[in-house]
Image 1 (cartoon, rainbow, N blue to C red):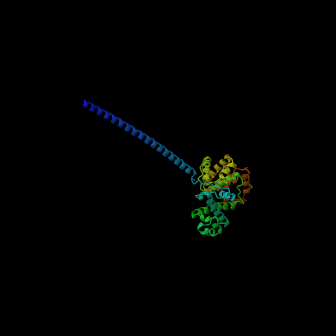
Image 2 (image 1 turned 135 degrees about the vertical axis):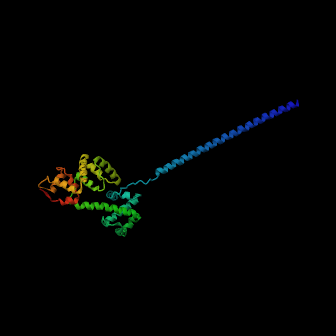
Image 3 (image 1 turned 45 degrees about the vertical axis):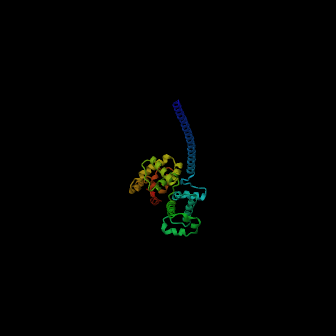
Length: 295
C-alpha cells in the first residue's frame, strides 16, 4: 500500500515539474518575443534615422555647386567685355563674379596701355603690373597662367580687328551675303566639308563651344539657299591651287569690258552680278585690283 502511494507521489512530482518547466519555457518565449519586438522597434527606428540622413545628404547634393559657369552680365560694361572677348569665362576656371570681374579689369588695363596685339607677354607685362589699377582692381589675384591666357585673348581680338581695319577703307563687307563670305574667310584652320549641310552642323557645334554668335546672326539675316550657294562656290574655289585662283577670276572679270573693278564690286553688292568669288581672294590681292579697268 505504501509502495503504491510512493509511486503516485513520484508521478505527481514529475507531472508538477513538467508543468513548471513548461511555464518557464513559456515565460522565456514571451521574453524572447518581447525582446524581438523591441529589437524590431529599434531596427525600424534606426532605419528611419538612416532614411532621414540619406535625405539630408541628397539635400546637400542639391545645394552643392557643381562648378557650372554662370555669366553675370548685369553690369553693362562687364557684359560688353564678355561679348567682345568671348573666351574670358572659359579662361577663368572658377568663373565666379569676382574672378570674372578681375579678368575684365585686366583686359581693360591692356586696352588702357594700348598693348600691341603682337607684343610678348613675358617682355611687356611688367608695364601692366606696375600700374596702380592692377592692385586696386585685384588683378594680382589672377594666377600667371590666367593672365597669360587673357593676354593671348586680347591679342587675338585686337589683332583681328587691326587686320580688318587696314582694308576696311576699300573692302566693305556691308551686306549679309558679303559678311557670310568674310566669315568663311575667317575660318583659317577649319576643314571645310564638301556639302553645306555638313558644314552647317559642324560650324554650329564649333560656334557653341567657342561662344561665337556670328554664324547664328548670319543665319538670321540670310536665307539657307543663299548661304548654300555661296558655300558651294567657296569650297570649289578653296580647293584650287593658289596660282589658279587669280587666273580663274581673271577669266570671269574679263567678261566685263570697260568696267572698273569698283563697278564690278558694286554690281555684286546690289545682287546684279553673281560673282562672290572676287571676295574670296585675300584682301591684299583685292586691294591691288582697285581702280583696274577691264578691257
